Image (cartoon, rainbow, N blue to C red):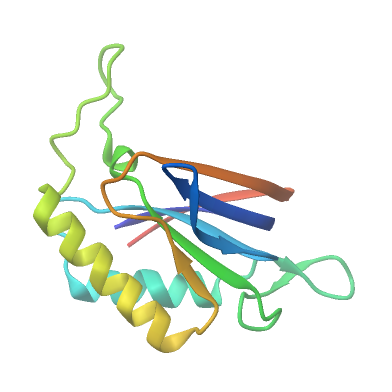
Amino acid sequence: MKALIQRVRHARVEVDAQCVGAIEHGLLALIGVERGDDEARADRLLHKLLHYRVFADDDGRMNLNLQQVNGGLLLVSQFTLAADTRKGLRPGFSSAADPEEGERLFGYLLDRARATWPDTATGRYGADMQVSLTNDGPVTVMLET
């Protein structure tokens, strides 16, 4: 599994002009599920999302994690993160999980996140989503399991 995380001041996801998920200060995580991913990888990714130190301490160094700053977590499914861009001028998606398996594993990750961290929001799997955010820093990091 992959997560492109962005430290944000706020972020929201809309589907059909309706807000389906929003957070204030925290992390927006675009989640890509690949073939061969499983629950163990989802668990490792969630651990990284909650513990990765990308928030500034009193000295301005990135030493604090999401839990330490009491931030929000916005999980958004993004199958295009599994794109193979090594050849040609068009992405290939053969490494992406099948839609049903991607939805199942994303749902598993979301359920575990909500059970662990109460300030968790999401978009809608497979929907045409509009994501808006204010990137803080900017800080953007790719996490992989």
